[in-house]
Length: 249
Image 1: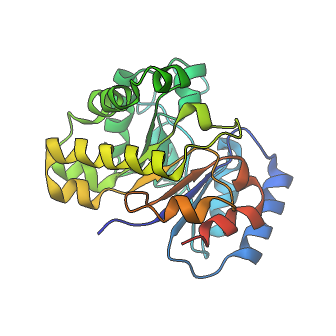
Image 2 (image 1 turned 120 degrees about the vertical axis):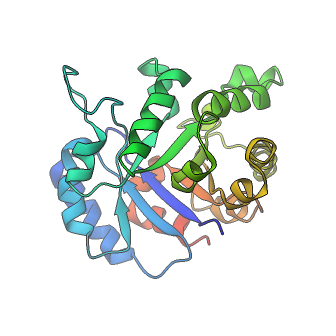
């Protein structure tokens, strides 16, 4: 049975003092929830966040990682390095990584393989840009991104994968796909999985929506049958807003 998840992607925000403050506020807001709760601070604050939250029901996850175990990759971080400080989940394929750092489906397939080889869970992101949506190509783009990066995997690998659909035109723009648009795409994603791997993988897959989810729209979006939670950007930087979204379940 699939899980409900709300993950906060802090992106390149919050120094150590700001991280400490936000974590303290998160602790004060946290309560029993029907959703699994995650936060993804910057690399420099992962260890501190993990130590601060290890007694709480809030998992600390990484925003990215390299596919290599080690080597001459200045500025990069490997899966084993993340695991060594207690991090067991990593976000891969975020639209900003694809757009600003030229991450391709082929590169992301290698990152996914490396994470899984290290027994990490992957939150795999994908989604169409505005031009794709206007041209009616959104399903083809999404299908291609999923197939190119994930469809070399065996059935068992999907137990450690969470999917996150991000309509790129709705990230940080204030625009949001309607709950109906989100549901339609999530249903298509589930159908795509079903066609390749069968009912069990598609039925058990947690599919998150990532695109300007806010307290005012979270309940309606999460109420759709194929939407299992959210990958939250800006709203995750305010504890009250983040937990309002979590509590939409």
